[in-house]
Structures are given as structure tokens and as C-alpha cells.
Image (tube, rainbow, N blue to C red; front, top):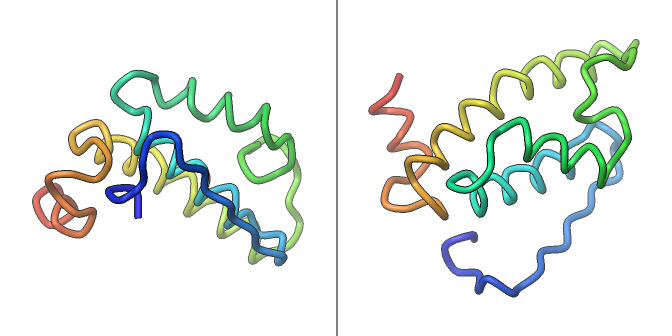
Amino acid sequence: MEREMAHDERLHVHCGMGLGRTTIFIVMHDILRNAAMLSFDDIIERQRKFNPGRSLDNNKDVSDKGRSEFRNERSEFLPLFYEYAKQNPKGQPLLWSEWLDHNA
């Protein structure tokens, strides 16, 4: 999707389950657009300001087992995705799956 979007196009995302999937999708979009210019920490901090909920705050208590597992997976995935995006701005030339095959 990112490859086809014009720079001034907007993306609208919504999920109602409360697990943080919307936030993750938006962070991934931000990473694909800005990894070449911003650090991972800067992108995450900006997203925390936009969405001050639990999704990106590892210091907040999450008692639901499913949510805590998803948070742990997210904590491992996002830095890896950032490295992919730094090497492949806007998801090019390699797809995520191709990059993983080369970097596993």
C-alpha cells in the first residue's frame, strides 16, 4: 500500500478490539515513510504523543495475557521493521518477506 500512496495522501485505520493493532499499523506506516530521516526512538515517541494509550508504553500494566503477549511480540517486531524500512524506503526494492529471507 505504501508504495502506491502519494506523499500527501492520508491513511485512515481503525480496529475496535483494543489490542493495539491500529497503533502498530500506523507506526509501521510512519516508519516506512520516515526511517531514513528519523531515529526509531523519535518515531515511537511521536506516536506515543499522538496516542497516549497503552499500545506503545511498556511501563503500563497489562494484566490480560493476550495483550501482554501481543505487546512482547510488538516490542521485538517494530525495531526489526525499522531496520527493514531504513534499507528499503517506502518498502522498495525488497518486500518485507524478501528482506527477512536475506536477514534471518
